Length: 218
Image (cartoon, rainbow, N blue to C red; front, top):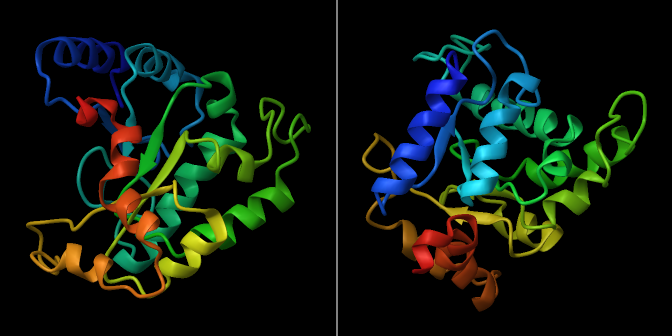
C-alpha cells in the first residue's frame, strides 16, 4: 500500500509464475486512512482487472500496514472496516471505472451487508456531486458479480443475508488455523442449515469462489 509500483510488479510476477497465486491482498483502508477509491490505487486495480485477478480485502488494525481504528474491539473493527472498504469502492466508482474488477471482503462477517446495501442505495446517487464516478446503484453493483463477501459459519443471520441479496455474493471461510475457528466443523455448519437452499450451499461452498477466482475452476 506504500509502494504501488512494487505491488504491481509483484502481482505481475506471481500471476505469471505461480498457478496457486490468488491475487493481491490489501487492507480495508489505506495506511493514511484514505478510502479504497483513492486514485493512487487505480493502477493496481487496472492491472488486477487486466490479469483477471481479484482484490482480497482483509487485515487487522494492529499489524502493518496500520489502518484506522487501531485498538478497536474486533467486533467493531471487522464490520466497520468492511463497510468502510465497501463504501469507498462503490461510492468512489471503482467498480464502474474497472467493470471487470472483482473484490472480496474477508473476515468482516456478512450479516451487516443487507442493511448496508440498503443504506448505500439510499445515500449514494449515481452521478451526484457526492458520487460523480458512480454509474449504478450500489445494489446493482453487488448483484453484478464484482463484489463478494465472506461468511463465517457461526453467523446466525446468513440465511437472511442470502434471502435479501441472493446466492451469488457469498464466500465460505473458516479463518483456520486461528483461535476460534469452526474447523473442522465449518462445512457441516453450512450444509446442515435447513433454511438455506441446496443451490445456495453449493455456491457458498465453492461455486462462488470459482467466479471470484477463476483459476480455481481450471
